[in-house]
Image (cartoon, rainbow, N blue to C red; front, side, top):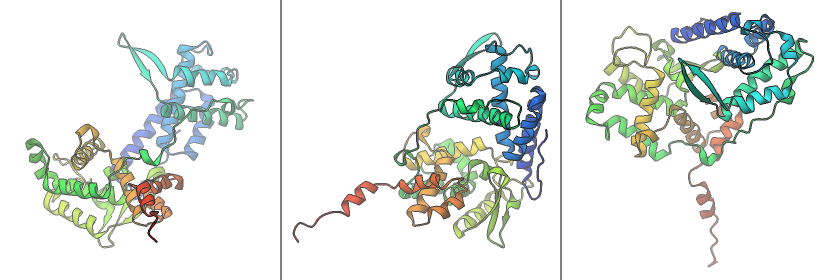
Amino acid sequence: MSYHINTKGKPKQLLREEIEISKQIKELELSLPLFMRDYFIFLKGSVSPATALAYTRDIEFFFTYLLEETLLSKADKLKEIKLEELAALRSRDLNEFLGDYCRRYYKEIDGEMHVFENNNASISRKRSSLSSLFRFLFRNEQLDTDLSAGLNPIRMPKAQPDTIKRLHEDEIIELLYVVETGEGLSERELIYWEKTKYRDRAILLFFITYGLRLRELANLDISSFHFGRKEFTVYRKRDKETVLPLNDTTERALNDYLTLERKDVAEEALFLSLQNKRLTQRAIRELVKKYTALAMKTSRSQGYSPHKLRATAASTLIERGFSIYDVQNLLDHDNVTTTQLYAAHRKNVKADIIKNFELDEDK
């Protein structure tokens, strides 16, 4: 089962990623039983290719477990697993896989035993994958029982406002000061900073202004921008195309980068390495971590990720009075409850409330 990829106006980097994902899905499908074909068609129409790949990998992992770790299947290969063997499973078999095996399991690789562990978030994703499969097989009248109904819940801690990590206004100012001056960088880092300071500043501004996801920023091309209209196009999750406005600050930063550093380079990617190649997501992540650590005056290991700059954008916009629904739309949150977490997270909010409730006993 292959995935149709819409190429209209899409950056080539994104197309390459999606083609590679499609190839990986195809390889996995060919290794799995034929009775899965309808399920693969269902995935194609209901989730993104990246999610389909994750689900298919999880199901392959579960089927491998059935073959190698249990007596629940007599097959020698994944493709030989029979639908009747799945029909003989009970919810407790799936719960044993999720609650016991997945948490800590062993694999022999090149003659050595390796230990693998999954946290609750990873196990929860595997639970979702199995739920999706067994619920579909039941609805599709391939199984008589919906085993997903008997799966144990995976306890996930709720995100609390006080635990949300983001930069505050003074730290944002310090962040921009650091990237503009190079203050705090080592002598070796200053050599590279002189060659990339305009690029680095533009990257940081795009994160804290628009709350872009790392993948969204890394895949920006020169052709993503329409300077006459002061806007640019970004490709979100689920292949969604969004046009965002360029404000004066980000436009000036971008022009500085394009005219003073990037200049005339044939590469389509917007943000380039010193080798004039598209800057990798890993390099961008390290760049953000370095500058945020300096801004917060902490160790490099405590520097923030691009996702925390996304949280910074959300919190800052809400603190400045923008509606959580407008911020939800800008950041492309699936659910407004995600945005509400940032609305609840305000620095010193408890102290501000009590201070404003002072009683004047002299009156």
